Image 1 (tube, rainbow, N blue to C red):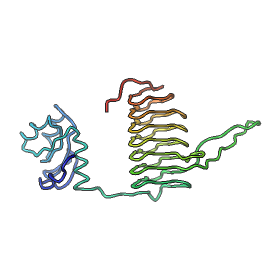
Image 2 (image 1 turned 90 degrees about the vertical axis):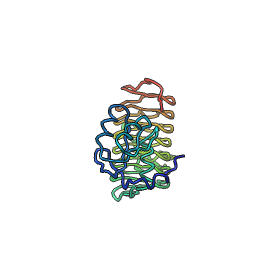
Image 3 (image 1 turned 45 degrees about the vertical axis):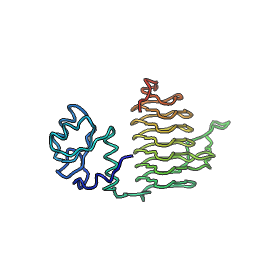
Image 4 (image 1 turned 30 degrees about the vertical axis):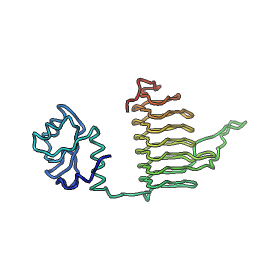
Length: 252
């Protein structure tokens, strides 16, 4: 456990990007080697969160360093500890939350998103006409979930569509009826889930992925940008392509 209080009097007064910093900014450098040398040497900041490998460079420049094998995470912890961002919204006024929707604690829903709309499902009758399938289920969203702008989460046919706690959903994502998304997932912009998809915990979906209906995806899966997933995916792998194929184990 990092003792964040020990940093309180070192002299930084705000956080900033490494290229936009002034002398009392706290910044982070998530690089090693030559890229780190350029960034740390050129920043005006006197306070840098970075890898232990960069300690000699930081000290030679007369800057104060804070070192971690996960500098981005340490930087975020310091940011939230000393300069907590103001909450912009919980449910944006332009978002629509419909029907049987259950929201957990600290859920943020962005502009233009619709939560609880009917799913897309029809059956043809004897005359070839489409008969709409009613949706009487709901949507259940866990704690600490963020759903950004212009997303749609459809309600379930009978049970609930689920978005697990700690999951972050980027803009323009479609989560269809009966989907169950696990905890701690990251879903980038433009991802489309077909109906009745099951996703485990801590998965990542790159920009523009498409997931076929009825597919089961395990935990700790990385789905690369633009991939089209048409079959089940086991735990802990990276899948890429169209159709998506396992290319290696996922190193977390």
